[in-house]
Length: 129
Image 1 (cartoon, helix red, strand yellow):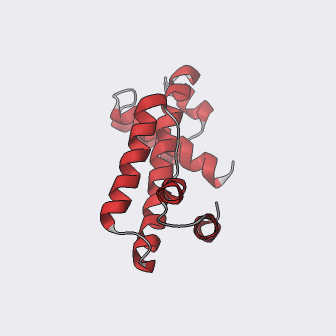
Image 2 (image 1 turned 90 degrees about the vertical axis):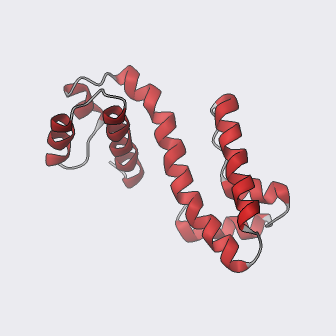
Image 3 (image 1 turned 180 degrees about the vertical axis):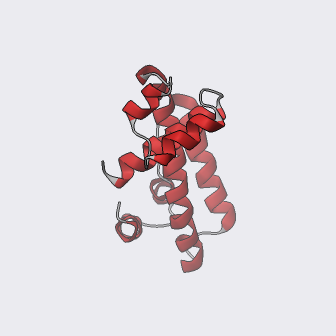
């Protein structure tokens, strides 16, 4: 399993716990054998359908985590203010609420003219995206 898949499965497990689909004991047992997997979640009563429903939210949370690092670099470079970054995160949230689309903050900052494509690509490459 790739790191991204493991991160996603881990986050889906925590989301299932958050929404009351897994108990504290279930969560502890899942992590006792390493990172959770789709089959291990099914074994704890979280169906594939439920995992499919939680996966996009997990993807958004993983993207937002990565985007916070990008935002910090953009602020440090002086290319955008904290207000501009907040506006970009707001745009990301609006896109998610509107149609569940995932918009990277770097892409939004390019649209707003705060950074150019080359800088965005460089920042994403720095992250390994």
